[in-house]
Length: 127
Image 1 (cartoon, rainbow, N blue to C red):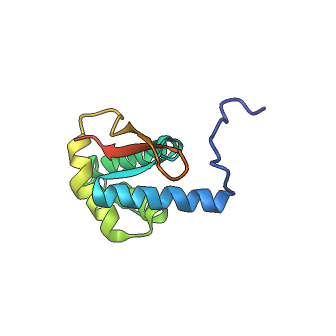
Image 2: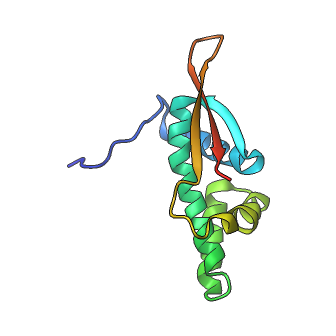
C-alpha cells in the first residue's frame, strides 16, 4: 500500500532530484535566501527543514551526549558534503531555532519568470 507516500518528483530521476535538493540546501545555508521556481521551493523547504531540525538536535545535545551529536553532524555531512556548511548550520543557524518547533523557512511567491512564464518564489530562512 502506498499510503502517505505522496512526493513531488520534479520530473527528475532519483539521483538528479537528490542532487538538486542538496544544491538548494547548500545555497540557502550559505546565502540565507534563494530565488527558484515555486515547486522547487516547496519541495526544497521540506528537505531543508529536516536538515535544520537535525542541526538543532545536534546543537542542543552537544554538551550532554557527545557521541550522538557527532553522529548527527555526520548525517548532515552525508547530506551536504561540506564541513564548513555543516559547522555553519549547527553553530550559527541552529542556535536561533532552539525554542522553535519547525517553520524555519518560508516561501514567498514573487511572480512569473520572463523567459518561460514559470512561477518564481523566494525561499528564505526565517529570522
